[in-house]
Image (cartoon, rainbow over all chains, first blue to last red; front, side, top):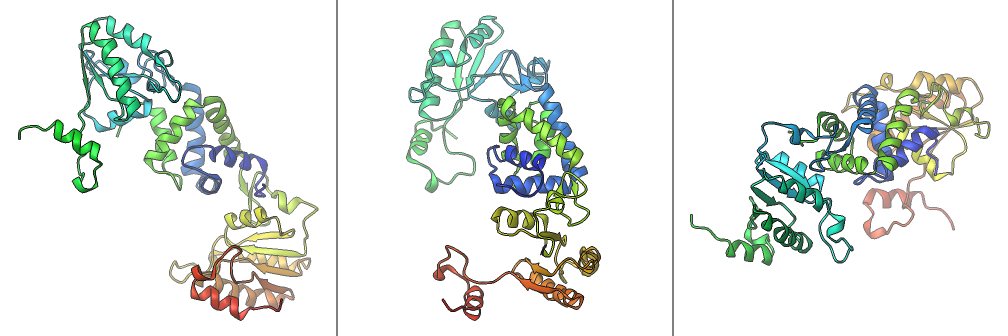
Length: 200
Length: 200
């Protein structure tokens, strides 16, 4: 289907439409906005994308995505090397970083165990994780995996693998989310929050 | 707010978040998807965007956005030079082209008259329109403007300006949209459809 905009522009629209959260209509709108705001959007975007395409890579240590072989977190002397936070995906790592409450380092698994999707331990970045733990600096591994069946299965599997290496394995607390109203919470969350109740 | 992803990637996320239809969260997701699908998305997108940034420009004749001084529509010998379709914006031109029912040429006004927004005739591309009509080839001008108050005001203003030049001025029909159910239509549309009723 032709827009009458020339093939370079239609190619750009087709590519933008493949991004998550965008469809053909919003991709057209985005591209039109870019072209109209050339100095503010199109030129800087083209440059930023070319730079990222040239430099973005996976950190060889933790699996984070950055612009050098070792990511900013792994090379920062300010980060605590004795605590390791294990996450499913890079997006989870970024979410933890935005919360600004964790000062240790990370390990990105690249997925969680899933019988349905056929993801077993060999599909996850476990050998590298065990190598890092075996180096002896890490004292605690925090399992920051989703509170889903697959996430919790993976957490238990990881605890079984990591505890024999002599480190403490902890997991994120489950309970009422901040700002949450009891009336709108599911039974499982209320039940978990009740079981993990604390004295004030 | 830092994601821990390196400043080039965060810069790209910040720019993507400025596009219409995307916010900080969906921009992060889009950039992460791009980086993971480097060959399929990031590399072609960077290249397409650089090409568009270098070549995209407004057609000097009609105001469409294309990749040369005269757009594909204005240079095509297949397009009828006697019919001109007048639209508010490039996105409207693209919408007309996707419908594949119009074989004439276009003129993009770049807006509609609006007392509220302070847009008068001087803000629209009227001199160029009158020059094109005065050249004598155009026999009919179709006003394909939105069925809004401003759109209709502009349509009447344009009819007053163009009819003295000796051409036929028409406008898109108003009525029940294809697939529309009466129950869900607003009063104005039903009223317009009734007034413009036709014999079967």
